[in-house]
Image (cartoon, rainbow, N blue to C red; front, side, top):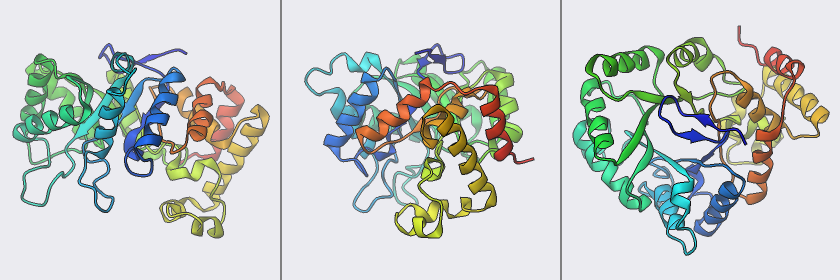
Length: 323
């Protein structure tokens, strides 16, 4: 399986990353361990998580996903797994009540948050440490200097950004260049066949010009691109239905029709085609995909081997065009 470099970091990843937001939330510990085993056994290596996963769930305080990953790394027989995988986690989303200071990208919070993440992950290093959100209240030089300290100390190997606008990402890259500090090597944007404009309009040209790796989230548009939501009745059958309601319109249905046609020609599934389209897009390093069952992951993993033709790509581009 051909691997791709994450920016100029020297870190090489397979073409699909596993979204660890499900660990300890919609996938319990035993299931999460099975998923991680299936993921690595398939030849993939980039596990994306965050300190905040899954703080939104009742009774959770954040850190559940990192904790599960750390427990998996320490299972008997898994001693080699830490060198087999790349762990990407994030800092910046609120990890405490308002006024607690457990949020943002200040040097003080980054220094505390990284130690918390390392403890939960039961490792001595984070391969890719990402700013989960832009923090306009903290100077970029303070944030990037804090990351530089962590890289010098060997606690972090490379840094990335998530949810940044093009102007702020450009400003961050310029700050790193001006001060001789490590730069963001990756961007994690919201991107898929139904959500193209936000990334393609301004972020894509910047990322390609600067050689940043792109590991996009919501690659399956909250499940819409699997094809299981095609009517109002389908939406009512799932707790996630409300999140995809906005896609159930003529454009969205047209995208599903194009996916169906390409999938039928390749004896594939719509989800596999949706991910294969992203993998084939110039500048995309690895879309992030989540699964809560091993069978789901097995289906998604096959997308990395699906070769779409120029005709396939053109059909999908036309159905999902935003300009």
